[in-house]
Length: 280
Length: 319
Image (cartoon, rainbow over all chains, first blue to last red; front, side):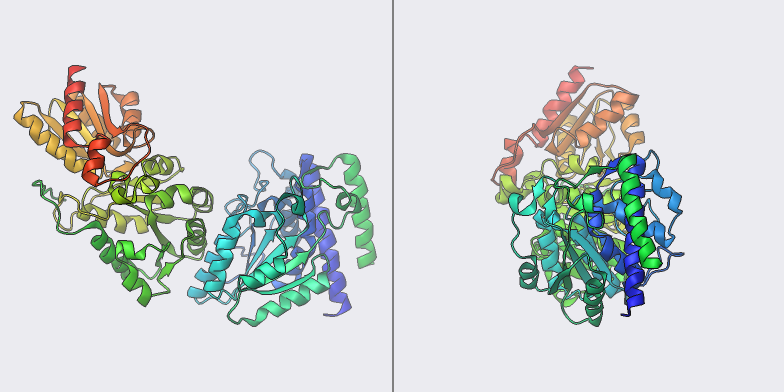
């Protein structure tokens, strides 16, 4: 990947974060930390890896994204708005009465959202069903599944991973957002999970662990998953909750945060400056 | 549809019927797909499953995942049928059925076997009295409880192409023979199996046979009781419920389930809004299940023809 593409992906990640802040600011507060931590992987998925048609969001052969940590909806909506699935201005309707952008991802409401999520763990099984179903239908697409580290507390995740390995779903790529925090605090203080890499390997996944806020590392790891084989893939994304906005990243309890006018101006100012440097 | 009830059991057990009907559906519809949670042996589908691993998927003992996988398969264009015992097919995966299925508009047919006291020797841990209530409250759901093998076949075939979450409460053992082979029992309808003038008994599942026995006994005592097979608990055939309640002026509901939230509740909702008449139930009275033979358990929980007879007399006395 040349440096121009790296810069373009970095810029896309910044645009996604800008859009995310835009959306959450419009309603005053929201799930900021976990939306920002996946900004880079969303940029690589939508900017490079996924085979999609923005003008045909339900094209059956498209690659699918299941954001099982459905509370990261604003991050995904930001991405979809930047890609042109719906007008950018619509981000300001987040959680408003009658909106197409509910707090958690809903495939029946938002153009470009593939799977309804929000009750943690449930996206994992749906992703397995989609990957199996697409394979049985003879489609060549892949299913990308973003799971939160706190979400891995849910037993359903592990049921689904066993299923994925049993059915050799090599068209499934699990992306674990290892941002170390869940709603009540640090994951290790609440329900320590040990090594996700070792766990996923033990569950039969072809697994790598990378810096999940580094677009180059993400792009390289995703490129590896194109080779098929007889194992599902897992990428442990070592991320920072709130990544991309220093003040958010440095806030301990950043699962859900207010974004008032002052913070909005400050944070979007920083992001716009970064964007100008990347695109300048 | 033709009624052939003569009090005898059907030669076909529910297990054998499922073991034939599920493969037949899969063979006739390439989009149909069947998932089980390690209980294929229990409904006679194991042999087919072992020979057709892409059509019949054994998910292992993981009902929540099975429900979610079914939702994913639905998104990929399949019409999933999933099975487990009623307790697991309802309580164990309720949130997955509710959200990944119902809320997300992924249509799934759920077979919950061993309803109520038919769980018999598996005992209280395996005895669903609440599954009907749980499935009734999923928006847009369909809740069915066939009264005989012919009814089971008809309903299962309809479910595959019916929208929403469909819950089919199915016995694996002997059932009475009520309908002539090949009879079609449309979802949303009820069948007046026996007309009457003094009271009406609305029943589902194994209680239909008990209700018919009760009506025959009552006739000998000079009491004319109608019997309605409410195999479609949701949507309930309100037209027939109202007509029969108005005609007879007294209603008894017989169900192999908890009195809260099941067929009794469904019938009362219709009666209260349209034609309040004295009503009584033959249900499990808010208890957990326990181990025993089906015959013992029907006595223990008051789910027999004799209990229905007593309630019919009681509601008539309240007219």
